[in-house]
Structure formats: C-alpha cells, structure tokens
Length: 230
Ligand code: IPE
Ligand code: MG
Image 1 (cartoon, helix red, strand yellow):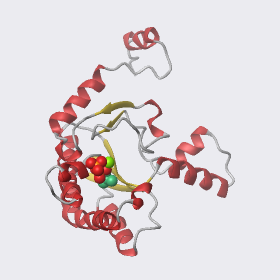
Image 2: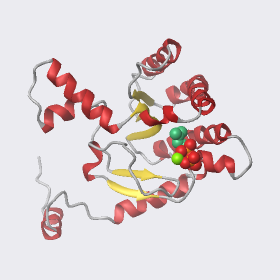
Image 3: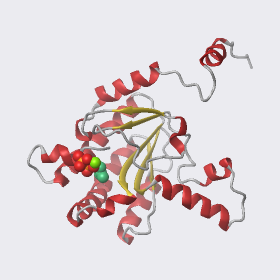
Image 4: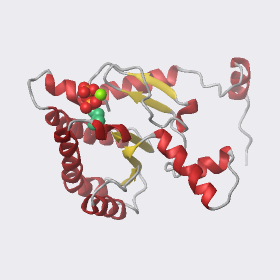
C-alpha cells in the first residue's frame, strides 16, 4: 500500500493525514474483496525498515494502528472477516500487542475473508524466523518444512500481488510466497486505489497464463482434459 505520503504532500497536508486516508482506502478494499468473493487479502502495513522513518511518523502510524483497531474491528467482525497480524511483535508496546491479540480473538470464528495485516514484517525476517523455528525443534530444513514454519502458513501463496504508488519493486514483501504470484503495478497512490482499480488488476490477472514452469502447450492440454467424475 504505497503512496500515502505523496498523497498528503500533494495536498500540503502532514504525511500522517495520508496514512489516515490509507486506512479508509483499506477499509473500502476489504469490502471490495468481500463483494468479489476473494478469500484472502494480505496487506503490507508497516515494514521492518519503516522504524527508520521520522519519529513523528512512526508514532503516528502506531497510533493509527490502535485507533483503526477500535474503529474497524467491530465491522470486520460482523462482515465475516478473520484478522491476522503477521510480523515481529516484540518491539510493539504491551498495549498494542494486547490490541492485536484481542482483534484476532474477536474475529477468530469468521471464515468469509482471511485478512492478513503485515505489521513490522519483512520477507527476510519471516524466512529467518521460520528457519530458526526448525533449528530449535531439530527439524530438517526443506522447502515444505520452511513453508509450514512461515508466518503466513495459514494461507495459500498469493495469486496476485499488487503494488501501488508507481514503484516497481517488491521491497521485502512476501519474497518467499510470491515466487509464482502474478505481479501488478499501479501508478495510483494507495489512498486513490479504489474498486475500479482492483477490477483492472483482476482483469489483467485473468488474462495472464500461469505456467508454473511448464510450457504453454502443456498448460493448454491440462485445461482441455475433462475433470474426472467422482
Ligand atoms: C504508505 O505509503 C506505506 C507505509 C509505510 C504505511 P508511504 O508512506 O510509503 O507513501 P510515499 O511513498 O511516501 O508516498
Ligand atoms: Mg513509499
């Protein structure tokens, strides 16, 4: 979700005002995913590297997280959304940690949309913590065991990865899980990313051929094969 700061600066507003609009855009995006029957939404809210931003912006973002929890969780709960926070919680205050746990507990029975909010997250952190978990429990490190020890083991790999704000980078987001994701880059700043933009991304995604290492001919043959009756 990139572009909040630029959205604010263009309007001569403080950057935090852009992040506030970002939360509103996220809330609309969650609803758009529900309306479209999407099962999993994972967003990058705060990276391990974002601590290096000016102190005022970092505290603004943390405050916004707490505010958004109380503002959004009741609606998420009644809309069938199950919340997961993904990332290293150690550096967060006890109050914030308790808020995250409570939001997860309150929505734990929901099944319509799994909503992963990556906060103090980094793809390299995830790979390292997964490897450490396996070492600690004496398990061999394989692709499968690592995959299962990852912080996002509860959802399948993403089909589509969208980055807004015009930057053509992954920036340490889902670097393990996005191995076969279709990438979509939008020039829209995140607060301006709306359901029409989401539909554009989905349309582009639908027009792509996903081969997973196979040839185009193999993929077409597989598509023609009748599904066996069970
Ligand atoms: C949001 O956009 C990303 C967060 C860390 C919350 P930015 O704050 O990176 O916005 P730009 O790139 O400065 O416009
Ligand atoms: Mg940015």
